[in-house]
Length: 326
Image (cartoon, rainbow, N blue to C red; front, side, top):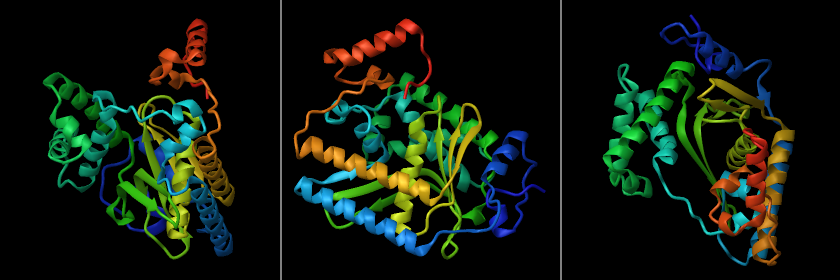
């Protein structure tokens, strides 16, 4: 009998159907190999101390302005600084809502008695979200029949792919879906993260956790950066880093896997430090923002008045480029 995602950590066996080749391939990537991973406590304490120092220094420069740092914040500030400074123009639509509906349905599947169809899970997720007093709930409650059908179709596709291709997650591995983590040290800067799935039971100072993000579409270099930020956040909050970071692409049933090391955590801290310092330069020091055109210019609210962005997109259209341009 093939065992689940935490099989090498716990030793129990769940009764379940044989894994498909796709599930087995991913399980082999997720399993722990070699000796248990234990980070040096002094190195972790030093990393956390330096993270505190960065937050304290930049907080003083911001003069009390509350700053919430997320993976999206870091992606924007390290990208086009002009867009980073724009007011938030995000609006929900059926396409952008597929993610949170799919994640809620997948979470329901993990706790559902029996073997529900993806359509049942998605319908229940939509109904529960519509009853919530939140921006997401208000959006879903106000959908037209056509928009609701579009949302449902996209979410059902994602949930089906996950249930068919991702190896079953045993309850003994203590999976947490939509896992929220928050770090608010002294100062005005707060780090927040919400991970699609975290698998692994705590075991002293042994690194046991898998941090998993679910994605659709093309791979992007920022996906690894996102997970490294989650690893840093987990480390400063709990002083035990996760052992492995996984970006799972639903469309291709492929996973990008990276083992956590001190080098990975140092890279994440350097990116955090660079991001908050850059934000302080733009806001507190009034440094003129740099424009860094990219494919995301297509969705920038300032595109109509940005010569650099329009020129960049025109060049992409001329050469027929389809991939990510970094």
